[in-house]
Length: 66
Length: 257
Image 1 (cartoon, rainbow over the protein chains, first blue to last red):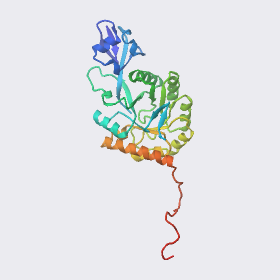
Image 2: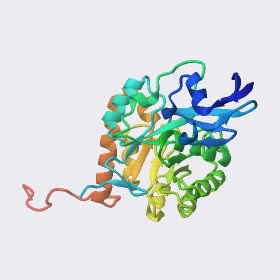
Image 3: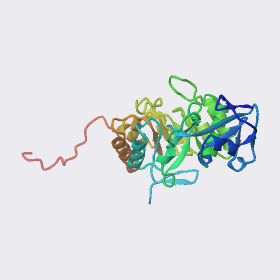
């Protein structure tokens, strides 16, 4: 199944929790924020929020800025 | 008594707020932050690069000592700024935001209509909103009335280094505002920061002036001193401007008189 991840198509084998997606991408969950279909997923809900076919996911972090 | 900057009940010993962008390296940024004495730094919220591992900015910021202020830079609508603010809150675990709604690509001047709209929404959601706005006293008043915790008028366009273009407006904003006034953007060198503080600004926020200097760490120290000097001069109360001289030495007892 295909999701849209940070604007680009991304294949996942089956529906995944936010935690599982971050694990497969080797991303430290403590340093990012995740949006699923335009709504922020709170960190406490990473294990229970499921990403499935067609979902739009944004994973952001802090970078240098003014 | 300590002369501290207080915003939304949070106390900062330093009145200088600095950015984290455009430094030659993360190590130089960290050294510049140290030299600046700043206790609050701005950060941008951007997509994680999925394709490659990059060094985390946060490895170079001691968040035990330095408070992170996420911005909504490069947002051109209230909607995008609100969305970015919400993500920044979740990434940073604080409800503070440097709110930017940009209205023009070339000048990066704010879209104050969108800014006011986004301020209202985010204040209602419990955010501590610090809006980057024009050097316009009426706009600053409207933002404060909408619940902004401080107002951040620009001194000049972002990254321009032109210094305070409209000192009189900054002075009026300070006289009228019931919230802290942070001059945000436009500083080029230390004297510009001192001018902002002498006008009564409660703080100065800058990025490029330090990060883009030939020696960012030395410039960071210069800015620290300038902000302190400007603040002291403001508190000390400068003399009135006069057109003609007033002698500093006694006029009587001059030899040969």
